[in-house]
Length: 133
Image 1: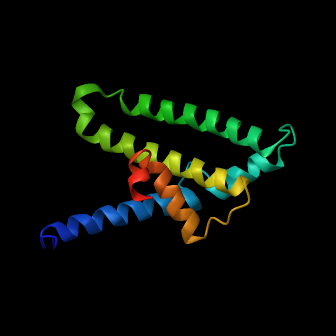
Image 2: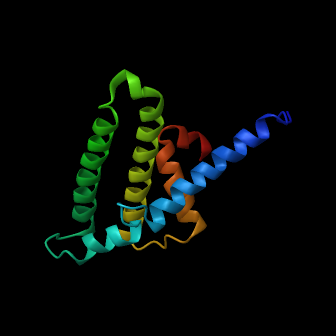
Image 3: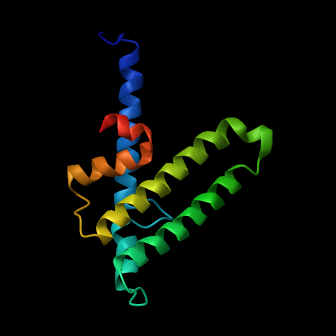
């Protein structure tokens, strides 16, 4: 079934937004550093005995940031709901994509690779990503 012409611009905007999220997570979006820099911070820290320990620490720290950003965007209450929900989703996806990129980099993958960028996107989809695979 061919998509309706009225759906094409919306789909294009969604693709642009997804690509923007992936680009910003890999290159950095102030005040967040890039996935590469985040991974390097963990790689140079010699207090971790293995990459798995680095990744677990990274996940715990980034999850706490994600919780904090969700809490802060929810402070406005009902009045700011139309703005805070999209902002919360955008911030959450950005933090999660950045974390997925850093994990890939810690394990030696090239973040410029289309394959790795696709895996970062699939990690954002969660269980829905299984359908794609």
